[in-house]
Image 1 (cartoon, rainbow, N blue to C red):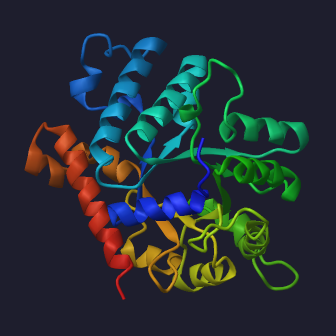
Image 2 (cartoon, rainbow, N blue to C red; image 1 turned 135 degrees about the vertical axis):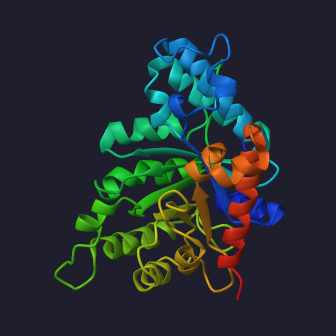
Length: 315
């Protein structure tokens, strides 16, 4: 258990690696490198244990590759829940693997509910286990949550974050195209739904015990840029919130798009890329460099990603 504010830990990790980047772990069996998926014991997608073992092997390798390069990984629980109980165990095993390599771990779980259900989600994904045979390293440093239920749904996560020095990233503006139909809808006062949520997140982020010595709160926001003007508005509405910025690479966002997510001093955001990094061995530009050496493709793509984001924070 740590007594350091999550935002301070995240700030320190960013400074140590000198990059505001995060690699997303979104594994699909059918996209695994042949070196893994064709290996004996890993080569049967129809067998739950066999396929999960292959996925776990791949994820461990990716985490090992990117750990010296980036401060954060984001592990998407959905890709492990497809394997049922063993998959959930694998998810927490990989959280522990990443944390053992010094990485900040964000659990991409997008939970949301009210009352006892929300409290149970917070207990499962943010709170230090109280069971004697549970290892506290299994728990992520932060998770993503859905604000659709309002403060009733988010407060249990905020309380857990404050109590256990964890982080929460509230969905404000997501990267999927149809989200604009809801998040971009105009309210009676002229602001969009996303802007209204941003104001609430800013208010929540200022609660006692949440703001670190770095000036940022343990309560952040998931913000995928749509255009420079609207992104700048969201940035101004949540000055003390870290932005977790999805959509880079495979979903079309580039360094110019993500630049408005940062504060003027170049801080306050962490940009995440998943498919463009972890499946880099499918891209011809990397194949031409490293042929069948898939690990080198991933490493090179990660370094390219870091360079691209660095250009977004330059004055």
